[in-house]
Structure formats: structure tokens, C-alpha cells
Image (cartoon, rainbow, N blue to C red; front, top):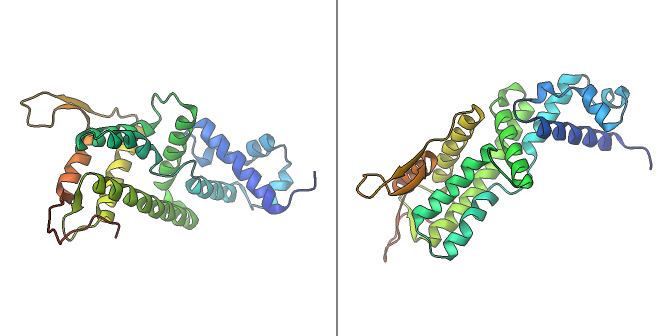
Length: 246
């Protein structure tokens, strides 16, 4: 094998660092990923790293940025997987909301059996934790902003698809992007609570209760409230509002 270039060595050491982060979990943080450990796992000498980074802090900055930019799947894949079959079967809007919300609650990484799903959840939570420290480095702030914009664009398309499936439009002058931003704040807020070890609230409502019947997560109830406030059924002759991404 030929000698690695500097770019190849840099990519290798960042990959190893990200793997260590994924193995150790969100509580580790980049400050606990020591460059000496990364070099040992990569089978490289100290000189290989210090030709690329001035010190460990420089490496940890680039590692944080790389982890925030990492995507193991498209942002809305878990939600689409949870609801596509329900939509095809003609399930109610409430059933779709509950299923999508449950899928999001599970991204806290608790009781996920599938290894790929567990890894995806782990990466989401690590990236979320790093984004809460975005002011540490300008590069991390830029990566966090880019990740947020990418997620908003993907989820806005997904919500537009759901709106079309259930005959809904946005209440004028609100847009799908407005709804998506509110959903992101709600979903990420509950994810941070999960990082804190706070159990997600769940409720069971019976016929006659003022709340919707059935089993609900608190997140699902919040989503339902947002849908009711942001959206309205499409009626013949409607001219206002929007069902597309703006």
C-alpha cells in the first residue's frame, strides 16, 4: 500500500474519533476523545497527527465539526418508515401523528433493538449535544447551522407530503417552513430531555375525556396541537394558505 496523503490521514483519524464517540456515547463528548487514543486505534504515530493539528484542542474541534456533519441516514427516514404503511392503509391522522411521534421519542436511544437504528439514534443525540455547544468554535456553529437547514428542508418536504395525503393546507400567512421550525424546536427539546434522563410522559385517554382517546406521548399531543393551530382542511374554492414548501 502506498503512503497516505495528509488528507487521507486526516480523514482516517477523524473517522476513528467518530467511531470512538459512537462507541462511548453522548456522555463522552469530544473533550474525552484523546488524540493519543485515536492514534493508537489507527495504528499511527504521534507525528502523523501533529503534522495536521497544532494540538489536541484543534483535533477535537475538527472532530466535533465532522460529527455534526455526519449523516447515517436522511433526517426524515425514521418518520417515513413509521407512517408510510399507515397512510397507505388509510389510517387516521391521529394514528399517523402518534406513530411518527413514537418513532422520534425512540431516537433517544432507549430500547432500540435494531443495531442500525440504535447507531443512528446515537449519532443524532451526539450531534444534538454538540450543537448545544456550537458557540465553542465558529466552525462548529457553521456546521450546526448547516445541519439545521438541511433537516428543515427535508422535513418540510415530508410534512408537505403528509398534508397532501390528508387534505390539509397551512393557515395563511403561515408556511410549511414555519411549521417545520416549530416542530424542530419541540422535537429537539424533548430529545434534550431524553439526554438528561427524563422519562417521556405518556397518557391513556378514555371516551368522555376532553383529550383525544387512546395512548399518547406528550410529544404526540404537542404535534397534534401544532397541526390544529397551523393547518386547516382544504375546501373547494380555497385560495389562501399553502400546502407546499416555502
